[in-house]
Length: 110
Image (cartoon, rainbow, N blue to C red):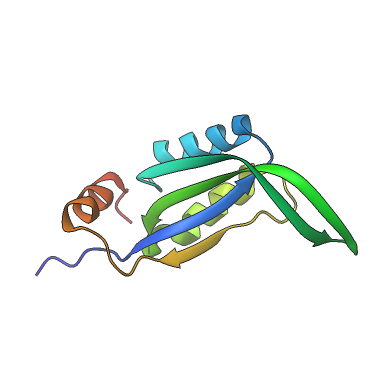
């Protein structure tokens, strides 16, 4: 029986397209992600150090597996300019068999 790692969708925001692409490319090169998609010019408001902040950001959706999350998170943290980057993983409940097979084939063996 071939057991495949559980797929995971990770959200991560970046200050701009350049940083998002650099880190996204690194994740692909290390085979920690199969695909990284960018949503440009999102607006975030949040509380930081007691103040309400507002920023224009790039949101990345990163397709990976639960098994790869720890190393993916560590890699993002090492290269991300934010003190506390948004790195949120959401298990994928439903996925087409062909996409799941492709996703798992693109990730490194752990």
